[in-house]
Amino acid sequence: MSIGDRIRHLRWDARLNQGELAHRAGIAQNTLSLIELGKTNASVPTLEKISRGLGIELSELLGESAAPKVLRPRSLDELLGRTGLKTRWLTKPREEFDKWWLDVDWEEAKRRFWEINAEYRAIAAEWEVFMRDRSRVAPELEEQLHKIREDAFFRHFGAMAAAPGKDESVEDFYERQSRGELRQFKQIELEKAPEELLAPASQLGA
Image (cartoon, rainbow, N blue to C red; front, side, top):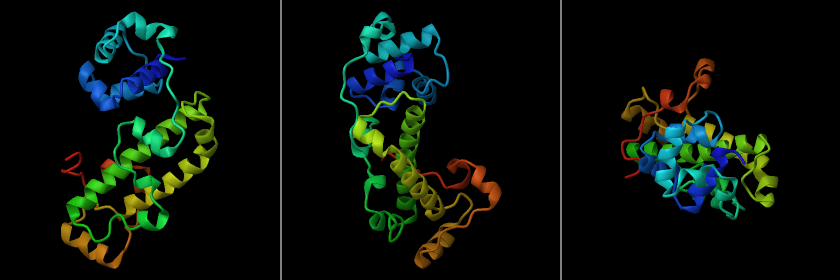
C-alpha cells in the first residue's frame, strides 16, 4: 500500500475530509490531494505535519501495520460521504437532477453547481485510482464504477452548460433560465477548467 493510500485510509478512519486534515496539518488541500493520489512525493517534514494532523506518530504513518482496517465504500452515496461531502446531486434520479438550476436565484444556481463539481471531482479521483489497480472501494461498487463515472461526466458537463457563466450577467442568466436554455461552448472552451468558465459561488459552504 502506498503512503498516499495509507494517509487516505487513516483520514477516513479519523472521520476527516481532506480540507479538515489539511487545515490540521497546516498544508494546502491541493497538496494533500496530490499526495493521496500518488501524483507527488511528500517530504519528511510534510509527512510529519500530516502525522500530527492525524494525531499519530510519523512511524505509525510510515509503517505498513499502521493502515487501519476500514470498510471500503460499497455505494456512490457512501463514497461521497467518505470525502466529507454532504450533498448528493449525482445520486438523484436523472429527471430530478436536470432541474437543479431551474426556479432558483443566481446565487443559489452558482452554489449548487460548485457542489455538483465537488461531487464529480471526488468520483473522478476514485476512478483514477481504480484504473491504476489500487481500488479503495468494495467489489460491488467497483463493478458499477464504469457506469457511474460515465454518467457523472455527462451530468457534470450538462451542469456546466446550465450554470451561470463567468462573463454572463445576472439578467442574461435569468433570461436563459426562463427558457431552460443551456449555454453552448466553443471548442477551445471545452479544454478549460470550470473555474475559467463559470461564476464562482460566494455562498459555497455557507
